[in-house]
Image (cartoon, rainbow, N blue to C red; front, side):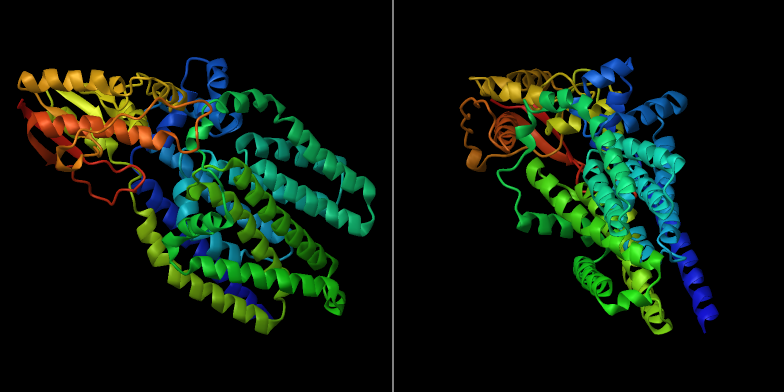
Length: 541
């Protein structure tokens, strides 16, 4: 029975691994062009020198390591080689799957059944982890560091300590959130050594955490630079209710009920782990199993609390990718706890059946979710290039989309964003903030309106990429007063709306013809960057 069950677990884990790799293949071949956040990163890493990258680091969301990797890769394959970037993301995603196997073995169970089901078939982790952003790479290094910590816990030594320190520094240099995860890892490792009364090894784990923290000191200047404008992307208060909603948003692509499964698994495994650790059942477990239970309990509880506190202090308008580290940490720990606790044949059969049921329920919605283009602006740019002629004007309604449009548009028509900030290699919230401080808010879009006026009067076209805020009953929009420093949270949104409303009012009043331009796409487009195209022609007073 035991040998048959073991073979069944290996077979199912292998099948799940192949299924997960296939999902990564679908994502890589469907994602298409780089969307604006990815284009932002490539625009930054392809600056003339590494010094220039460092000086502008505040305009991206990551430490330097992933940016240096991308810079070297971009130099090798070319900055416009979207297919190569998708291949790179694919291998990062497959690397994460491989590390789930490594950590399962380090924790004392042979196969990562639960983590393959929870994390492997998680569309948000696949889509955003495989993107050109640092999320997947950071999670990969976090899992590598976790494996190195488990090796050191198993048998401390100078070589293993050095490897752990190197992995820890690399991990936090890839993703800011990993500093929080490393805190949880060090707490878990130190807890095991404290239980053994091995205070020297516990101290060495603490030193590793301190070294990694010191490596982040140079980023203080970057954070100070961002503090002058990042209030534009912050919210007044990050609440637990918002945390719950956003976590659901991250897990929803694989099923509306998925969050409930995660929460139930978290609660059950924590309670079962505490019971096993504190009761006589502890004597029935091996030393490795007891270590695995303590390690996963401490890492998960400390990690979740610390990540929530990190997001609370950050208070950004979070998106699904902000929660990938949390999911990776939780999924790995749940797998470790179930592997250590569900050892008997009956429990293993229950675990195997539950994994199969969960995988069958989520694989089809997950397949649909990862079969998405991340943007259609490359298609939009090509469409406008084919329709426009000299003298036409292109208006990109949302200034942030200008980064992607800058990357892909090669047409003859002049173009500008609303407001016309004049720089589109990467996102410059500081320039938008400068526009908000002007006393003459109508003047912020005057150059766009003047260019459109000239084009329409001369019989040319004005193409609009994105949605303009049309005013009801053709009422002229009122200008907001100049913003004040410091910026209020979400201060940009009303100003962006008023600027697009001003341009929309102008076209509504003075263009003789306003219509939608069809932009067909073979695959669904992700909602974060899916602008429509409109065209205005003719002039009326």
